[in-house]
Image (cartoon, rainbow, N blue to C red; front, side, top):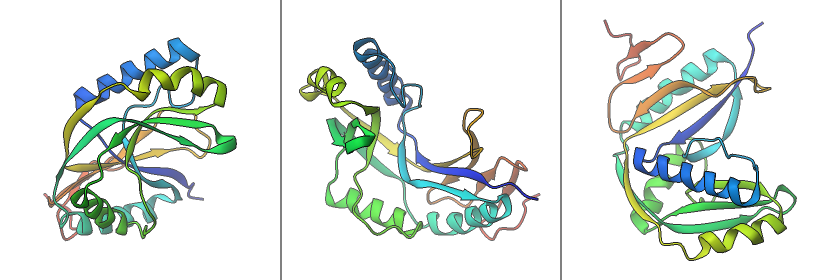
Length: 199
């Protein structure tokens, strides 16, 4: 019987931002102790993870490739920090992605490929799942900290993991925006824009 796995859809910021977010996480751990996401690599999540069988996911990737090739790359701007109060799930502190009309339209188009129409707040999580007391200790360090960076998004990463995580996420596929090729980890086979295998 084919086993279903969990697939996540993410955008990656620049290497510079990834390293800086890692330092923010380290500072946070030194300030309030261990927390959820402290070992997670900086990223923007496009939609919630999906539980799928392999062949279903391969077909989904081919469909996404056809749709994403019409979406251009975009330059995004990270501008300071914000937070969510998720009630019992705790607080989240994140780096804010500016949401001008161009950016909102771009994300709306991208998320329509996942049948997502609700409002979306693009962000890069720094700290997740902390209590109100720990949030009050940490947030003053981020509240007025000036942090502004730009980066270009030209691809989307799909990660794969077991239902019960026993290892780090593995890259299942990388899809390039506005480009004709995708790379599937399972077979390391390159497909062209028609879905046919390239020699």
